[in-house]
Amino acid sequence: MKIAVLMGGNSSELDVSLVTGKAVNNALIELGHSVIACPYEIDISDVIHVLKQADLVFNALHGGEGEDGTIPQLFEDESICYTGSGPDSSALAMDKHLAKSFVKKKDILTPSWLHLNLAEDESVDLSVSKFSYPVVVKPNGGGSTMGLTIVEKSSELDEAITLATQFDSRLLVEEYIKGREVTVGILNGEALPIVEINPFHNLYDYTCKYTPGMSDYTCPAELPQKLTEEIQNVSVQIYRLMGCRHYARVDFLLDSDDNYFFLEVNTLPGMTGTSLLPKAAKAVGLSFNDLIGKIVELGIND
Image 1 (cartoon, one colour):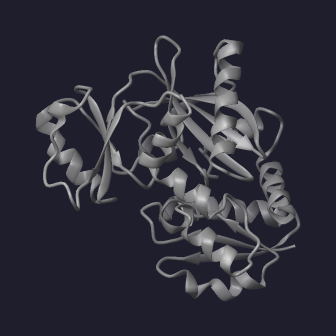
Image 2 (image 1 turned 180 degrees about the vertical axis):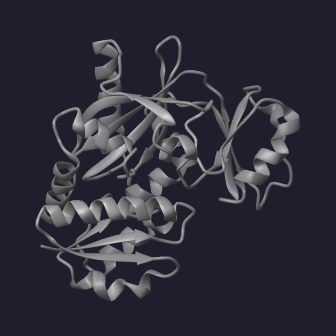
């Protein structure tokens, strides 16, 4: 097939998207497809005419309009066949406040949080909140842990908020839960083996995510079978409730009592050399090329 790989974009995750796009591009060539690399930095209109000529667009964008529903809506409007979730589920997953509110109504645990709009709220008062320091401050939208800070005391709060608002005027101040970081890849509505992340920093930050050797990974995660199945089942439940399609990744924190707390859904998880979804796929015998081929199959047949 003729497949266009859309990468880059105008979000803070442009560089990561380019790495994902290159890896996907190479895999598609090895699978025998005719591939058109479509990077852009400001306006998708620069490449839209190329996208329309392809049998399928592989959406390799991360964050921003690629993952918040804007680009998927454009694909829908232009009758372009594409990979990844649709506009509504993308928008829901990207908005951390909405996503957390959504799963909480389904009695799924998620860390307590305050949702703030700095365009409207002049000050931040944590004295009325139900949780105390440390807290996590992060942008409401976006990914790759950009703009996220673990705040240990009140004197550090303003600096953390200033950093977060470089990425989004809306942000979350979230209960800090010390525990194990685990993630569940979903492929075609089925859970892959759980990956446990052991970053060398005190959180799984940008450096640990994308620098080889800065994190250790265990897949399948060493968890009791019953707990493994529970987390996988809840992940699939969230994926389906949000209306995701083709593939996604659901992130959790696991505390010392084996309570698992939902953090977020990534509707366009990374496909780089250190990315988590390919690691989970490999654990069930799917090579990177196999994984990309399966996503293409799902996209073209949807």
